[in-house]
Length: 428
Ligand code: SF4
Image (tube, rainbow, N blue to C red; front, side, top):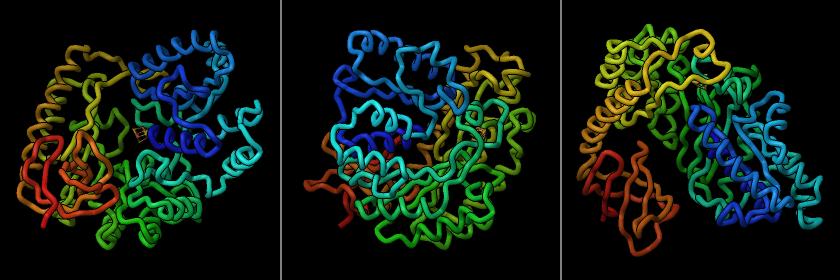
């Protein structure tokens, strides 16, 4: 979500005459888009802010903006007191504060560009930049649900991003059409619980219906969505995905823990058995599919035996990928207020590495099944003279080609597989 927010803001800034700078020292406007999901991320943001303080003292004309979860959606007075040299405090996903400030301070260079800034503030769909200016001309993120109302006991996101709000479907469709017109081939719909799209407004479609509408947009060839929640991955949604070939068979389905007591204390609202049932449903309907999951180790009170259940569930669910995190108490969350962070740091690291080791084995063996197979790859870029792109199942594939493949969908025969990527040749 933060990447999507950063892209949207940088797109808007480019639209009003700003260009990317190589270094912060060269920039007129510096935006620090922050994540506070773990203490270490927040510490890093504070460190960067300290270095910006010196820069602002020497160059008061520079504009500094603090954005994202560190700012949150509440009162910014304490932050203003703590960081008086910051000019703008911008809530997550809000690109208007920066534009508003630049307009007011007469830092938008021409009359035309000021009019553009106003159009962006008025949410005119034309503000989306031409694809070639977005850095990634092939694939774009489209936030569809902002905030979250679930309140998992460890999670700071509802406190910082606010309650769940679905974006109006017309706005989303306009954005997807504008992206398609600019050459974007793939859209990834974003939400903290993306499958809850429309639940907060009875006049909105469900995610399943929204997918159907986006499927009709000419030029869009692939559609992805993340992140799902086991309680909201409905049969209707799975049925619809089956009917819509542009929707890729890749599921981001967090488990967070394999032990039911830990899941209960996390306030996740499902059991490990329910999770496995959904995984089985996905696999039955989509024999060629992939599942990525999230998992937290060292949640308060997590015993060695309970942690073993997390390893066990990975063995059973066999996800293609696990995004693993060490539990970090975040201010204001239920777990911080009511539970003791009693798993030592050393133990958290031990569990973290155990998950990583197991996942690497699982991914290696899943990916090995792709060897010598043909896969369809949408190419996004070039790294070290090799073109790279993704399969429908979100596997990263590299190939060599004398001509650019960016934006093309090609059949590729896989010649090598590893846990994190694959290599192949364009199929003849
Ligand atoms: S579903 Fe839970 S983990 Fe995900 S953003 Fe909402 S509160 Fe956080």
